[in-house]
Image (tube, rainbow, N blue to C red; front, side):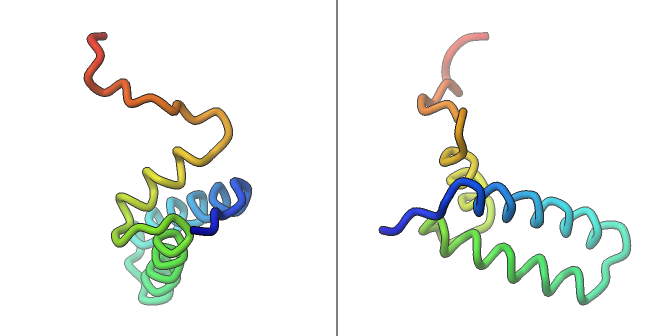
Length: 75
């Protein structure tokens, strides 16, 4: 599988988060369509099928991401 460049992934994540806020604030059809387009691109770029998995996968591919799953470690 081809891997998207981290700069592209970072940009897509930022776009998605911005569009999600815009859609939540005004609910415009344009913001929703653009958000859906960016979500689709993130899914394709990360080899996933839903936006939540795509966001997780994209964040793990960014520089400085933790490679270990520490979700089960005590705080």
